[in-house]
Amino acid sequence: TSFGFKEVREDEKRRMVGDVFSNVASNYDLMNDVMSAGLHRLWKDRLVSKLNPFPGMKHLDVAGGTGDVAFRILDSINSIRRRAMQDVLEDDLQEETKVYVSDINPNMLNVGKKRALDRGLGGDKSLLWVEGDAEALSFGDNTMDGYTIAFGIRNVTHIEKVLSEAYRVLKHGGRFLCLELSHVDVPVFKEFYDYYSFSIIPTLGELIAGDRESYQYLVESIRRFPSQETFASMIAEAGFQKVEYENLVGGVVAIHSGLKV
Ligand code: SAM
Image (cartoon, rainbow, N blue to C red):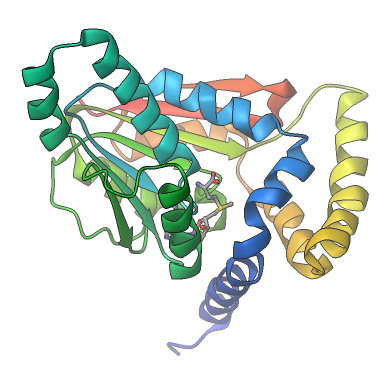
């Protein structure tokens, strides 16, 4: 039948993820800081420094939520531009730079748009917000110099579809970068991390966001996500070359990267 067990589970998963991020959108940024003790800021900095953004680039940040990664990319491009101090060139490049923040949840994007206004990026023509599904992007083939996805791929229904879409929209020479909560394999630290995620995170979710279940779900989704090595081979299967990964904090998070040649 077409409505077998697998479909029910996928449907359930999609609904859960939708609920989680609608429930947490307004608390999302605070919760990130609390749960990671501010570390997610450094991890995102690292992601963007690996990306090496440049003026004029076309970049797509998928599952971009409230804009954290996109803001960093624009900051990095703007500081290069300021250093270059070539006024005429500067204007040309500003026209060309495009950083798209794409997310399936309009609540997250709306929080992001407000944050952009607060940061004085309201009039920045380079920053574009696009509602959409990572599994079926609305962008053309070979259009992006860079693709990032931070804490996003873990929650999608079909990881392979996301990877093949990433491959499709990137230009030849374009980079794929993924920041995701991953697997800790360091003795003692692993036990501490398990305790932290299974006991403390749901409690923090309850205290701060009034939503224990959503955070419990997030912790479980981390455990179900493929190991660093398995995920790297999935990226290679999607067609990417030079696939590598870097563990941060013993594998609490990993940054995977690949190149479309
Ligand atoms: N990248 C942001 C950050 O690091 O702060 C947000 C990460 S947040 C944990 C995960 C995001 O993935 C949510 O905004 C959610 O709406 C989005 N998301 C979940 N499933 C998605 C899908 N299939 N396509 C696009 N975005 C999705």
